[in-house]
Length: 48
Image (tube, helix red, strand yellow):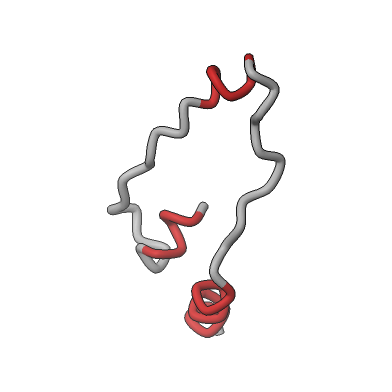
């Protein structure tokens, strides 16, 4: 999601590998991501 916001909605973004299977096995998988508030503001402004 963060990659999409940084690409301003374009489909030309690279998805970073988060090694989710390993994190899940270690019971460390994140339930939420921290996103820069400025990035959210830019995305909202672009939608309007």
